[in-house]
Image 1 (cartoon, rainbow, N blue to C red):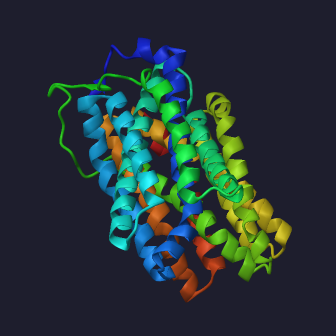
Image 2 (image 1 turned 120 degrees about the vertical axis):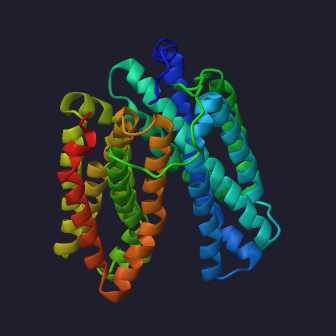
Length: 390
């Protein structure tokens, strides 16, 4: 059984190490969100339809899911610094390539690589975050994820703003990527240089194992939490337009309410977790998010829908960070494999969940789909104590 390397707490206590962790989350959020404004340009440049575009975007998700399970063991062998730095560098390169890929196959390969680097960074930076949080003796994970959410907001805004000013997608990405690289150069030296685990095999462990014990439960709960996020991301605008009659121009405000609430919730989440504890945060967060979906479904007014999506953001904001902390603290599996498994299961919910919601909606309605998500969140709340107990 792997244990935390005893040489790391002193380094992890340093404020520079905490800052470097925040930068890793911020850079990743900025890079990921920069892709969204490029999608219409890619569709036009390659002259493809919606179905082909959907398959193309699927390459991004497939790449992430391929890289996540093997990243934990790689971090254990080579350390957080190497994996995070290399992954972010390659992510920046592939991001630039997305703006100039001349054909569908090349774009598919670039998206696959971009997704792989995002998946690898996601696992590695969460492993570092667990170590830094343990060493600090207080909750910090929500704040780290808050920087990811902040990057997600600013990345899309900056890209859209630069293109609105007349820059081409390539030159807009060039400006953003230059900033990302400067941030990486500044912070990389303070990332944890050593393997976070020290075990009898010299840090060597299998590249993949089937999740077991508490890790399986935590991963399942992450699946539900990410499914809720994906439901709002992909279906809130459709819901507001088709079932509440909101003009498509304003239908995106539902997701905006959710995003702002989630970002604020994460930046205040560490104090909440330190005060209430992880179990209560998951319990009350799950109930709050479920209430949000039920409000959206059963109160047929526009204002109620906006309030509901805001409640989903408030409730869901700190569930995933607490679950990642729980994955780092459990003893069923080594930390690297556990976090890789939990992140993979969570992203499966984010990627596959919205498609399932669409299928259910096709057979019944979006009200039924959102109701099922609410039931899943209620089950998540009930399972809070079991998931966080040591």
